[in-house]
Image 1 (cartoon, rainbow, N blue to C red):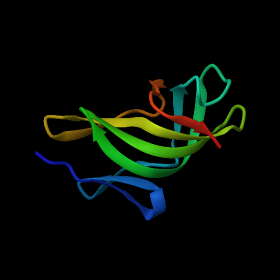
Image 2: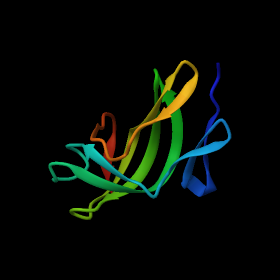
Image 3: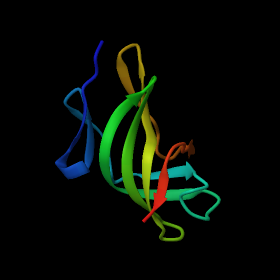
Image 4: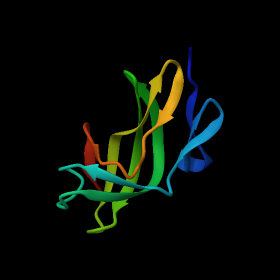
Length: 106
């Protein structure tokens, strides 16, 4: 079963099958050595640049800012959910996520 993914409202939302599922107002707790020097980065998302499926995970390109140190970062592959039996399951932003892939300080 195919899942339709796209960003909406100038990158403020990720839409899954025409339903707003993930918004930028959440703070994501990330284990990310390249985000900033904080042991855990509390990243307030400012916008999504793209969204795609990577295996069974839904990942998004995003820009955000660490609430602890103020560092602004661009994250290439933030895991925001997964696909199970053709259905989208959103990850909890308050759970610590490990970020892999390109991270750039802005």
